[in-house]
Image (cartoon, rainbow, N blue to C red; front, side):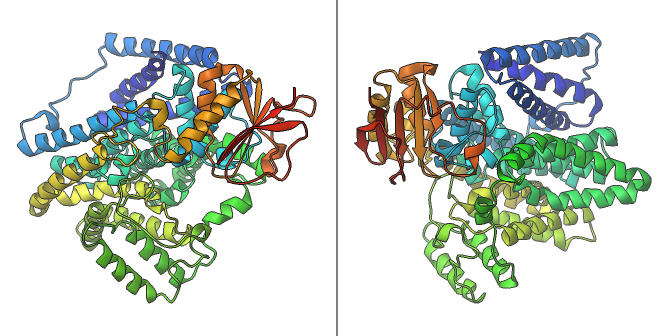
Length: 631
């Protein structure tokens, strides 16, 4: 139960902000989340400086914070600072609201069960999300280290920071999926709050909550250790506070500016695409602050920027030291960027980014044919390598996988809502500006990033950010009935995605409730299960102290290390071996010429250029091979 030590800090921050943000408990909850996110970051960075990112130091640190938090809570309650509030709209008798809430609760409950029972088994989680976590735990630090998979180093790490804390405090990955799960819940709450600031009534805020909670790919991601929902949550926190700066903040402008900068910083630290998503709202807030405050505006904006940069300073510095750029190795990051920036290239990417959400049963093939016809007007090949990542062929499918699923119904509603908001610019300019920011970041996204097979999951922050506008539209009397019908459909579809997940099904014959936890790590690549189990057994033989890993750039590291650790405990040390990329000059490896690894594991369908002399093959079953040192 040691993971409970992380909770009092958020609770205390919530009640402290609750006294200042008198208008809405959601505002206090969002502000408290930002404070908690900063605490996780600071603890991770400080403990890493002393190579103390381990159980006892982390428990002591969270224990001290919890003790201080309880002191704050005692003061709040003994001084009578907690004020009574009127009954919430959601507690009043309203059959439609009750039905919506009940439906969303069922989706939350099903996803909660999946997130708790199923281990991480997403492809990216196995290659770098969870792999970087166990490397940090081994090193007791988040320093960069030699690795064959550079994404473990340079990509945004905040979500994995939070997972690392839970992993250390609980001794396993049972709660690893809950970072995304909690971000899913938080995004729905924040969406309803932002919808209120756009002018939505109570039923409209409920629609915004529902929209955010039922995004199909979001439901699938909510039980994984990916980071798109975490990014979406921090982005929505930033949008909320930037709107406070642009209008009238519930708390002081200085506090709002710090919270806005911190939330934007956390979003960027989680996934760099947040720079694209946050830029239009930053510009909006900056212009509004300059117009309203004039003399004080430069300092407010400077505070916001300083908070954003401070949050990312440590990670940027590590990247700069290892790769010569705060964003990572130039050769690898260039693969994500479009190589041409013509109007035709932009139109091509817009068409293809929209198309991945049109995989609808029955009518999908007709829509796909239409997509190809429309795209031909651009004059570009639909799989042009200059704007398509990795030489992939343009394609999309109907599926329930967190990497590829589309959001057709939500796309339709979002498009109509944005169109409505812009059409009614003169009647209400704030929603129109908000919608314009969404359109701008969409075009920036399409203009900058190459199309990828898994692009739909990168759209998740966009769909979450558009939820408040959808809530505003449905709060209008003329659209409420449409909203009720859409809500019923969204809940039913959401239940399907929550229970029929391709790799973590709840009610299928191969339900997560009936499978062994160790087997479920391989649900995305079942062909790896037998060779990985056998290789782990071979590696554990003779109790090696040091195991060297050689792999490709996208091979599965985490489940193999887990299987070996289950047999040998923490006595065995893993290190990437014979690293040839830029990370080879990072912190020294444990292995040296005089102290080579006892065994070397090669993961992936390739043969290394050289193996050190003195090793013989002990196990071979593609795509994994084990070599042991001569005794």
